[in-house]
Image (cartoon, rainbow over all chains, first blue to last red; front, top):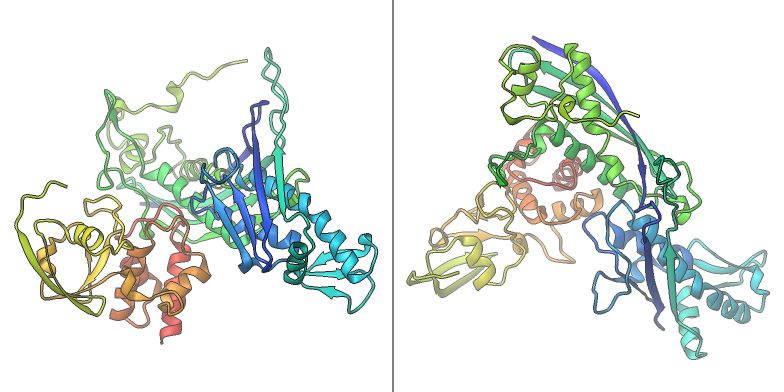
Length: 346
Length: 160
């Protein structure tokens, strides 16, 4: 028999390292006479798109063309220390560092533009890729012209920025407190179909809503949401590291299965934007939040479908059949039940 | 790699170019492509035929180059990602992968594109199930596949 169920998983996630741990990044930007800009950042590109996002930040701040921005990243010989890419911190902390480097240089840019246009510097604004004088139609100067003049007039063309994500530690005795400067939120909704004969769980559809603060690049965020959900699907249904005396028994991709294109359900990626003033343009970290709610949402949906809760960390067909009482689950065969894990009681 | 095998004459067509060179035999096609021809676009993921990263076309058919003895390519035609398109003259699927966001870390991408190209050569207007089947041997850990599937759909539309 095939039965269906719906489940929700929700999470809150502290972005960055928190707990007053060191969490800082530095970055440099330089404007070349031809109007190109180089960013030096220690942020490493893993495919999440941080090079794209950092370039977008610089293009926005300077009114430069996105195509004219070059990124030199994650080279300890050349780039300043930006800390690791982890804890969903790269846009939030390293992005803020690049923003600070731009701001370091922006005053120089604006004062020269005001001289060239013959207007007060508070009337200069950078908008839609151009540097223009407020309320004075026709007074426009291109970024590349300005860049060239900066060099001709011997202005500073190199900016440095540092961002420190300062956080508080929790109370040592009570473990209570506000340990992060930014929190990300996400909820996922999953519909499953469980085959009670075989124990196989099929994900019919999945919706993932992630609060990203501000979507600097919506396409990259969708990619993270979809990729995160599919990893979470793997954790819930397929992936289990089988370790025996420190040795992996399934250390290759024919025995440790990960989702293929055929395992992916239709996914609705919902981007929620609740601005966080501490992030660049209100953005906050969203990479790990995209994968955390998936497994609980799937396990909840299975419980809804079969009216019994899978307490194994993996809802494999075998474990689902054990929960349904169709095969003997008493031996546990090395699986750890969640209820076996001691939970601290207040 | 320690290689005690004799040299073989590798006479074949690679990316529409005829080559004929002597090379240490007994290796897989992937190693021959990367080590002897410096065609680094083809990636080794698992090296044991499970992930699809090393997919190339042999006489137009997708094969796993890590599992294909190099000698099997003699007298035949091999297409790697370098032969699919170049900057400025990209294959519609390469263009669609960029536009749809089908690339994240990029490691599965060359193999994924080779499987996609083979599918599109075989079938001009594949439906979603056929696309999923066509790339089901190519693992991707980043994207969740959906944008890759959409990219193949877009490429098929452009090519028809």
